[in-house]
Amino acid sequence: MTSPAPDNNSELWLAHIADMLGAEASGMLTLHPDGRQDLVTDGHSESAIAEYRDHYSHLDPLPSLLAGRPDGRAIVLDTTRHPAYLAQSELSNDYLRPHGIDHIIATQWRQPDGTLRVIGIQRFHGSEPFSIALGKELDRLIHHWRIGNAIPLPAGFDARTGDSRRHCDIAAQLSLPLVVVDCRLAIAWANPAASEEHSSAWSALFDKRTNNSAQIAIRRQLQALVAASLRQRTESEALVAASDNTWLASATPLNGKPDLALLRLTAMHHLGRGVRGRLQRLFGLTPAEAEMTSRLANGESLDAIAEARNVCVDTVRTQLRTVFKKTGTHRQGELVCAVGRLAVLG
Image 1 (cartoon, rainbow, N blue to C red):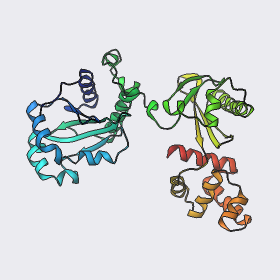
Image 2 (tube, rainbow, N blue to C red):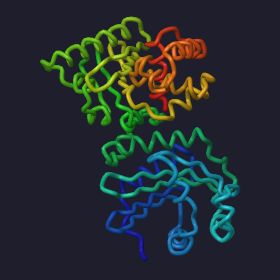
Image 3 (cartoon, rainbow, N blue to C red):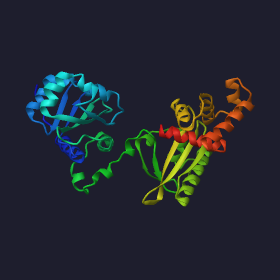
Image 4 (tube, helix red, strand yellow):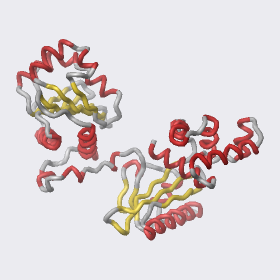
């Protein structure tokens, strides 16, 4: 089995990443939906590559470890201590140790066409181990690389300052919809997740020529929120009611951009169950209190919550006062905004 000709752009990108992380070696394996495999390496001899590919690759626990990570998120490994590697004595004793491979950072992601790309960066014996901070740095580099599923020209990095890592565009790859707007709601930037949103609040935001009275009302609320945020130079929040949902809208001024704010809209209905757990851990709420708070954030009234739980509404009101005290909030709207922030963070 012979290695295909490397993609020059990939090879240069790998060299750039390895340099940014201070690593001695790097490599990318691409598994295509039709079964083809491409292997690009930097810092390894051809004999070592062939040895790993032809015999030791099936022993490597890295694929199973990466399978449990979100797309594009790095994993940091010490191959001399990690249980998964210690369990593969043949791989460790006959390949990793002789080649001095002690530390690995790796990540993988699957492209829309089904192609799987796996990146591994290695440090050899005697080097400082990779850190969690370096793992986060690899996340940033990989997210930047993945924009539009295209590999940018390496010259784009040559033209930048030595601290080019600061220019990596992470926000474009987040599944959380984000837009940057001015006080008139003119959109200066939107990530793909926002552009693909078709719910009422997002449609109102993108359709500035709408004649729909409900969407006009939503735009007015959002415009007032952004204007207040820019005027006060602080984050502002508001609950925005729409036909299909209640939204927590949050506007945050951008540093260095006095006329622009980052706008987020979080759907409050059907919040994930994870929010209840976070309410219990962060504020010490009981399971019943967390359930009541989650229902309230989902738009249910106190009467509806009482009926669903088969208790009187006074019991729910008493519970709500306890939740106010534990969370440091004073009104239902303020409490719901706090829950919305947890939904964003989760």
